[in-house]
Amino acid sequence: MRIVQRLQETEYGRKRIEIAARREEDAKQDASKRQGLAIQDVERASGPSSGSGIKRPAEDPPQDPRLETPEQPGGSVGSTRQPGTKRDVEQAGLSSDPMEDVETSLTNILLSQRQGFLGAAYAQVEQSPETLPVCEEHFEIDPEEPLYWDNVSGKPLDSAKVQEARREECQVIDAMGVWEVIDRPANERVISTRWVDVNKGDKTHPNNRSRFVARELKQKGDTPSHWSDFFASMPPITALRALFTLAVTMRVPNLEGKLTQMDPTTCLIFIDVKKAHFWSPARRRLLAELPSGMGYPPGKVGLLWKSLWGTRDAPANWEAAIKAVMTLIGFQQAKSNSCLYYHAEKQIRIEVHGGDFTGVGPKAELEWFAAELRKHWTVDVRGILGPPSMKDVDHSIVILNRLVTWTDKGIEMEADPRHVDLLLQEVGCEGSKVTTPLIKERIPKRP
Image (cartoon, rainbow, N blue to C red):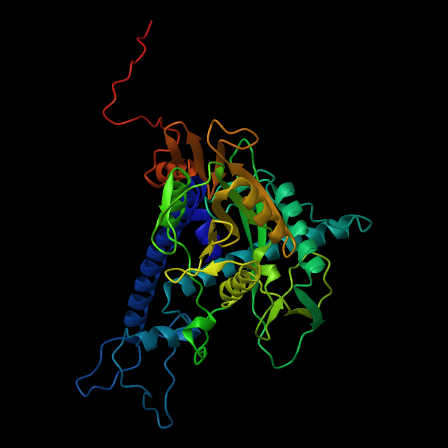
């Protein structure tokens, strides 16, 4: 099923599926015709039924011994069914399934070809016993066929870069102690796993990421003690826009509702926690399949000590780890959404989206916040965004695949440009020029 889904993501794959469907339909029609002719042969061989309802034996002996009707002791015919039924076809040695009939025909063809090949080989050996037949046909993978595809866009990925990303993921898993390699237990469930490969960059500047994820599905009767065991909230996009609004506002209300002046060095900070889920301890006993081709011995599984992507409680475990660290360094969790935090003393407001932290506050306090997170996790400060008049800060940055720019008029946020390619691919207009509606364009005249 996954192969069909992968083929449907590309134009080349969809053509292959259409050709295969036409061939299958033609084969079914041919099989149905042959089956109809076989039923007619059975009816002619069986002959008409008598008025008493007992079928008379055929006057002429059948050519095929499979079509002979067995007789009961005493000369009576052992069947009172009407000819041409499904059971007659099955007793005649014919299949009622058209595809089964096709498979039988193909098997007979292959067997006849095999007999001819063996006969020629034996003759060659008899003429020159020192020369033995050798099969020189090689079955190799088409070098032009991509081995890996982007799980989001469906586009092919560079095999060498995907392998490198996967090796890096396995090295991080081993270094952080995500699992313990143990012998496969006899009577314990092991969660299946898979790779998710994504190019977070573009075609010109690729940024391949590979994640090894579990496929833990809900089992029958597997009900958590409370909904909060597996639930993890996500912030709305309006929360990010609210931070942008606060960054360009001069006065904002405090906890008492009084308007307070914003610090003149107010900036935005964007922090990425590396391998976020691997920092949160597992709260259940879970076993996962190990990745193949990465040097792990056979007959082993991984006993999870940390949360693995794809387990049902991984987001909830990471949310609990965030709350523990943020509370430790003086933040208060919002009541409206558990992904929002506020530090009254430092005047810092934080929005958490998975492993991405976005904060607004004075520049010096934001640098303090990044230093505090480094004490607990491996973080990457992607940048501090400030107004054009401020030095030593960024004025444009990409966050959540959106281009954010701080201009003299305010903060602008541009949508993900990859969405344009996805929309063009969906409507079948790949390679077309995207223009602005209601804008006249000059079309160059032909010479």
